[in-house]
Length: 508
Image 1 (tube, one colour):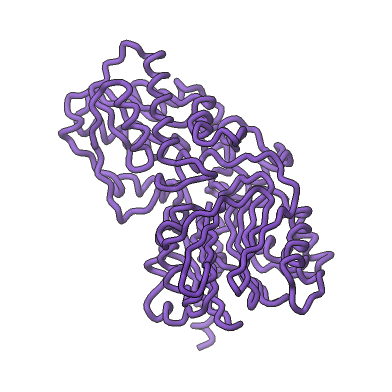
Image 2: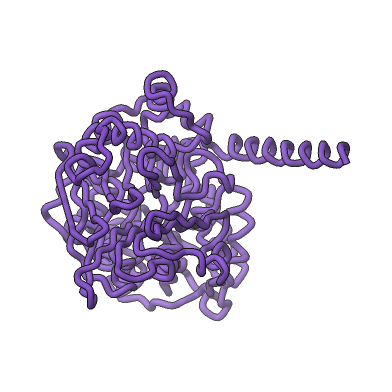
């Protein structure tokens, strides 16, 4: 899960891209980058860190031009090395720059084909670089000095034939325009909008509608599954369905956790969807625990707040803010590595003792993934004086790996995998635990847009829409992307750096 933005305007885009990335910061905290095009000259700044830390005044002065793309990174496939900060660039043809969100499920085969058949070198283990080089190769095959939209769409059609998975991407073609596209199932989100300026209509493509809102762009619509949206340097809009759309299956976890509540995802209000999750969770609680003794409902900030509020209203129980969040600590879920997530929980939250003392408390969270956060928070509630601590999850138990760009690669790291609800309850230390039903979760989103009949729910039900995910693939993914593997790569990287420093010192 990453944040993307692409803009073509009549003014310098640097500040616009910077401001937009700050709005999309929740989608990735590992790295940030901006590439602009100024009359064919490319300007790049990218590095590990938050947007505010990566870009300084001296960098912004260099990010001139009327066209550009930006990216905030959340590491899934690959490592968190600075070399993997996006956008990625290849010089041929034309000079192509890519920002990517998601994951290709056939990266191994594509990497092999790129080397053996396309004769292209891949410098990192990122599937984003693979996607960029696939597109570059197919665009080069068009053999056009000045590509038209049709040439670009034709090249992208070949990309769709070769690439599988859940992905959304924005490509800047130096001197020509910006191309946005989405996988044929619409798993990862992408939206575009426009605004009127003195010099005519301007366009933006982004991961979430809130990015458009922040810069005064009106939403045109979501990019359709398998569709390409191309904005040329003259600010003319071109669209084409580049591959037959598959079953439209947007990721339900965007509504559970990832997206901002003020966003629209596939025309569904995230905020309203989360309210409906609370309503349905309350109905299940009433059915299963009619004689509950809950005194107060307390959300675990921030994502669960709408669900908890509506649940409390439905139950007729007091809603209280019992935890104060430190705004200067990032989202623990998207932190790379279990140890970092565990360390950050108590830095992130502090309990208001008054709201817990001598009360039976129902804590509401958006989901339970690894169990790291909720276990510690339950203990914090007890330490603050709660008599009983109950726990409600607005999503079902996460039991299966995610392969479409969310950092849940290993079933062994998921607390609900292979365990009953009672076993999870015991492990996190709750007096009792209640999960949302999957059918109710789906209906909570579907009520916002009845035209979408299916959702990508693989982490809950193990059903993968791309139909190319088997046990062998999941095992290979776990071996490469589990926390242990990430730690080993980090250690190897540090060892290489230390050896390099040692060599330099010896030579001097």
